[in-house]
Image (cartoon, rainbow, N blue to C red; front, side):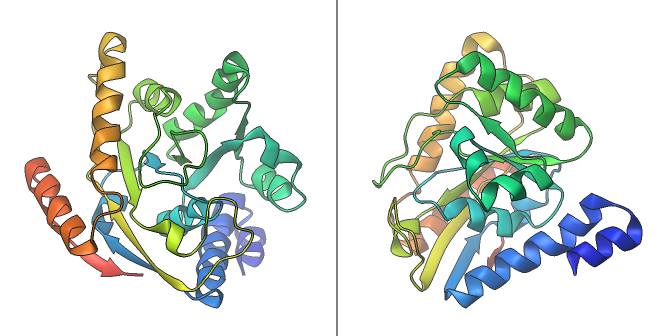
Length: 239
């Protein structure tokens, strides 16, 4: 369907916007995975944006992408570029592949993503840079935040509370189950200064960690509080 739309409109992005969410949601449905999303309105409140998420397994990027639906691309580790499936998909969707062992090359690899942000395409990235098989959130890299500051777009945190319920860190397959997800209000980084970046990032990391591994009803209460502080309405919806 997406291919047909793209050919009909002579617009690759239009085709991706139709094909990607259909494929991802079908994939999750076939595997019996449901997403219980708190704060879903925050996915659409300000776009484009840099969407960040805590990385628990190989499938949470797919879950996050299914929620974003359209007009986004993904930042992934360079090793995925050689994967028989994800490599071609990444090239088709203008995915940015970064080498975590080469910081200078990683910065250069993010520049096209900054350009896409300025053109209205959001970015999806795991700021930890690797998967963490714990109920803690690993330290965040500065790249996603610098990218948002440069493009003058907000950062929107996505918190997977219990993604390990459907797949362990290195699992090759998904198990049926419900994953609780919290989407926090957009964070305005336009006025952030380089000198305060470390403290700012640690604060955001702490917000995410405070929502991981706690009961879903408490997650709902915390998101309501965060949303109220930001002056945003609160919604909950099951996807």
